[in-house]
Each structure stands twice: as structure tokens, then as C-alpha cells.
Image 1 (cartoon, rainbow, N blue to C red):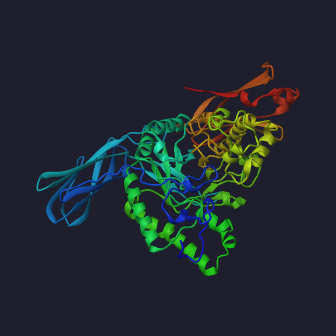
Image 2 (tube, rainbow, N blue to C red; image 1 turned 180 degrees about the vertical axis):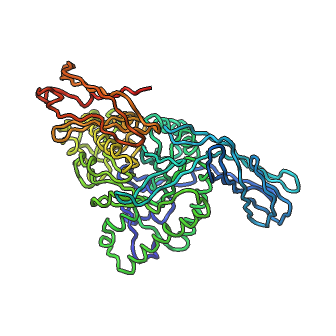
Image 3 (cartoon, one colour; image 1 turned 45 degrees about the vertical axis):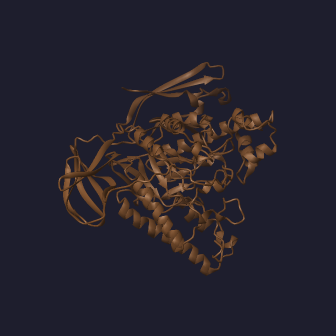
Length: 589
């Protein structure tokens, strides 16, 4: 760091030196807008030493090559380490086998494996999550020398980025089927990672599965998760968008740093690539849009030479080194250099790529803007809320907790402070009276913001093919964009997700005094049924009902009902009635 003639941007590092970019350590621990600064130290994972006699299998990689009607073809790459040349070696995986010569050092043998009548691995909601055990056996001169077993699923995944009628697409195709991704951004579960038990992993993945999610983005400012996380994603059908751990900063480009990154990528990709849940490798979080839009060049007063050097280092790491390694280590999965591809500044940015839409919050736009700004794939968006008042109280002796107390200020890490959150709440639900009121109304406001966003994304399915909100979980009890509290307690928004991420959803809207209801389904067979519309006054009395036979195809948002409000209400005052919650669908069996 001291050798560089300039400082590198690291805006979330709450220190004068901004040292975080020089060490391969979880970025969020240096402080973030939802996390306090806690720099843990020391070795915190188990260590083991493994000894071998001259010859062993060092790696097994299972790839799905082709899926046909009655069989699937897989490729098994078995890497062997030997201290000498050997002429008569054989490897087997299931019914496949290969004879070859082993050279001193590392040798990789590749063989084809046929699976008859395969059961495919599908994302949550689209099918089962069949997992197969694959055992590679190494024989020399007919004797078994070593064997390795790993688990994998049979599935293909593609990221489709093609020119189309709107711009450039961005969607995932699993086993040949386009899939609308419903999920969230996942951050580490604690500031102190050794406190995250297997039970906590089980609970959080159950909470993800229970509301219909099929994808989590492991965000690049956290950590590469423990094996149990990916095992559970495999078992529950939760696809993983896996960032490499770089976020919102520029990084060094010297050979020592880059070589360290190479070792990191090599280790993590080999560790994780057999998991069918891994859907995408992504180089970093927001660095490309940050360099081009956040004004770092002026803020740090870079010379043209320094500016070019910094960005050249970025391109070298994320558009050369990492993708070239992935081409060797995992050629069957897509790679994205940075997320998002498009900034949220203008209309054209929403016509291609993935987008982090922060017009709501950072841009201080109304939460109703979520219905207007819909991209091809929404990989970040959100609204802040506080945890429950009971959770906050467990962290302080203050009783009650004053709204303007230092405690509340400390629990709000965003540079926007509580002022913006209070404004959003006041616009929809009235003035916040005290801290308990803040906790309650902030969660209701967050749930409403997410309703507007997710309904808008699903209403435009096929144009928009993913909705990953920021953020699923929390590291402590503070103000954040999470739908799960640090303890795992569900916020109001997480309960809402059971409807918003359900396979079939009714979406109602009123524009220019006309009410419309849309049906959108993630059912491959489509959906057919009877739409019922009940109009009630605020005493629960019905003044009218309507019904209509409706149908919607897979990922089609179909207009199921349209009628002027005055017709629905039979010319009664609309202020005296409600209708939105009176729409329901009876599905034909």
C-alpha cells in the first residue's frame, strides 16, 4: 500500500488508510452501510494435514455434457498426483473407464459417463433435486490405489444474453427451460463467523425455500460460504449466483496480489464446481459501474496515467485472469465480470443486462418508482427497515428506547441516516411517533415497497427474468434492507414473499380509475381457473361480485380482469369500499 503513488478507493472501509483492498479478508468486516466495523483476527477454520504415499487422486470434477430423452452423458475429470511415471493405470467412474499412462506430477484423465433414464436436478418449484454419488477409482497394475467420492446433479445451465425486441436479454436457462429467478442477496450471517452453527444454516435455507425462492446471490463483500451452505442449496433447489469476493473498491494489480487471487480462484472453484446449485461465477460487485459513475477519478485526483493504470489492473483481473482460469477449471458455467452490467441512471440502462436499481433509497425516488423502472434482470434493489422492537431492546438497557438516542443512531449505518427512512414511512403511513412505531411502520413500509417491486417484475416476465432483492439476512440487530432479522425472525416483508414468490400470483393495479388484474404463473403447464372478484365495504358487507374463466401460459402475464372502478362499485363512493384484496383464483385440477 505504501509503495503505490495513489490511494485506491474503498468507500465502505471506515479507516483513513482504506487498507481493506490489500488483504484477502471479508470486505464487510471493515464496515458497510448495514454492518459495523469488526476486524476479526486469526485462523478461524479447521486445519488438517493429509499425507499420501507417492500416488493419489487430487481432484474429481463431474460435468453434464448432454441430456437426451433416455440418457445423459457426463464427463468425469480425474486429476492424479504421482511422484513417478507409471505405465499401466486405469480410472473408473460408474460404468465408464479409461486406461492411460501417468506422468510424474499431475495428470488428468477424462472419461465419459452414461446415466440411463436420468433424474434431473431442477430449481425449487420446477421439479425434484436428484443428487448422484460419483466414485472415482484409480487402479495401477490391476490394484486399487485410491478412490474419491463426490456428489453432483445432472443439469445444464446457460446465461442467455441475446439481442431481442427490447434490447439485450439476460436470463438463465436450466435444462433447456427459461427460468424466472426469485430470490435475494445473501450476506454473512454474523460479524463473528464461528458463531454460525449448522442449525442456523438449516434454518435460513428452510426460510428461503419456504417462500418459494429459487436463487441466492452470494454477495462479493462477504465470504465464500461453508460446504453445508452449498449442500443445502443442492438439496433444496436453490441456485447460487456466486460472486468472487471483491466489492465496491478498486484493487491492486501487482503480480504478488494477482498470484494470490489466482490461488484463491483455483481453490474455491475446485471446491464448489461439483455443486449443481452453482449457477454463475461473477467477478465482483459494482466495481465497473462504480469506476464509471461514482466520481472516484475526481475525488482522488488521479492523473491520467494513474487512472489508466488502476483501470488496466481491473480489466486484467476480471476480464482476463479470472475468465481464462474458469475456461480451464469450469468451462460449463457462465461468467459475468461484474454485476451490474447496467447502471440505473437512464431508461436505456434497463433494456439490457442485470441492474442494481437504487433510485429508491440512494436516489431518494418514491417507492412507486419500482413499478416504472423494471430491468431485464433485477439483481439488487430494496428498502430499509428496523428489526422488531423486542429485538432492539435485547441489545440495550434503555427502556423505552428514545428515537433520537445514540443507540438508534449507532444502529443506522447508512449515510442517508434515519431521515430518509422516516420520509418514506411518512409518505405512505404517517409520522413515526416513537422507536416502537419506527420498528413497526418501517417493516410495513418495506413490505409495501417489495410488493410493488416484485409484482412489477413478475408482471413483465419474459422481459424481466429475475428479482433478487437486497438483502436476505443481517449480521446484527440494526437498520438494514433485510427481510430476516439477525436472530432469524421473519420481518413483515418475508411473510409477504410467500405470496409474491408463489408459483401463481394475482397482480392488481388501478390506473386512471380502471382496475386490472393480471395472472402470472411459473407452472410449466400454465394455469387455468376461475377468477373471483368480491367488492366489500369496510364493515365486510358485499356489494357485488364477478367471476371469469381465465388462463395464463408459462411465464406469461395475462390480463384476467379489467373494469372501471365506478362500474365495479355500481356508482358508490370508492372511499367506502375496497377491492384489491378481494381477487382470488380457484385453479382447475
